[in-house]
Image (tube, rainbow, N blue to C red; front, side, top):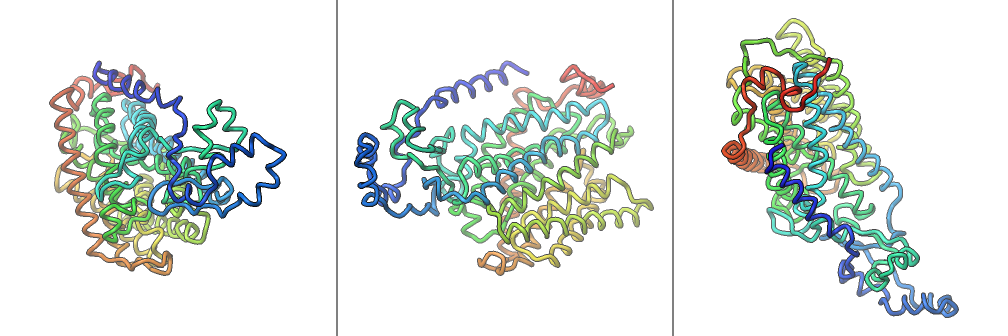
Length: 498
């Protein structure tokens, strides 16, 4: 790692250290909660005079404050829904599993043996890096009110994300006045009012992790590790967080315009896929591309990875309901159906065109189906899911074979062909098949969906390409030809697989 890279990481840790000992701010209590709840003085008096407390309690009781629908707020611990929380805890773990080990194995099996450890390292390092960036600023920029284009800084360093169990817990802090306003309360996001904000923030973190990790498929086997860390850091803050805000924060321009993206068709897949194309173009082709054999070294790893992605995707799509309810159940069902349809569609297309169905093909088709159903999963019924799956399998197969060959770019593991193209298919067909019966909202519109797709494509490509060029002019993007021929496992990490 370069001196510049090490300095960046040290600065990040130094900035976060003072926040570790900060007390929860009393002003985190929203005005509505302060207006409807008893003031801190009666609570303190009750704590100091136990004999008077039982008589005073009925007079002090008041209805619990309703959570805000426009910004994060505080509610009583008793208002948390345990069923929803349990499901979202499980969903967070499922989506994290999609990156480590799911995506790491999926990509790791498709590269040559001399690059497998470097490929695994990319997914693992991104998981760690994005976690800290999300804590510092990413969550705040994506999921707090701000402008139509980016969120505010009210959750910088996750300030205000709190949980205080009871009076005894507050007293244990030895600073009761600073926490008495939040005794027995927990913060919730306005996007998930029945679960603790910690759970919602960590669930969304897993999306922020896998999105940049998907990009790695385009530049596999040739990008510097230090350059990758810098690109992913900057990209996560100035590309991923704003686009997530556009589409998922109620005040974002995409959400107010009516763009439908239930679980990340634009935010995750089109976004990562178009950035992947920018990477492939900025770095150029691998040494020996189309001249030397570059077959996957271990498709067993790839199938295991694809299977973990499939299982984890139920947390991705059904978890995006942010509740254990009927909508989550429908999202789960259409995810399974569309994935199966896409895998078979890809398999039969390949069988027809190349004469044999391949293991890599059916696994890639399954991922294409998962991608395409993502934006639609909370808006469509099972029959449209079959159509979306078949369309994704056929179109992504053509994109990963004919289109890539025609245009000549080296998208090593088809990140653009599967994720960007599959995301576009799913986003546009969401506009065709969205049913108001599932959410009681507005019907889908292909024109509105197209606006969201185009905005993501243009902003994502232009900004990603500029970031890459700046990094190339400073520390360089690509390993040397000698390092590439030796393999990134040895040249970048000093390790290799026997």
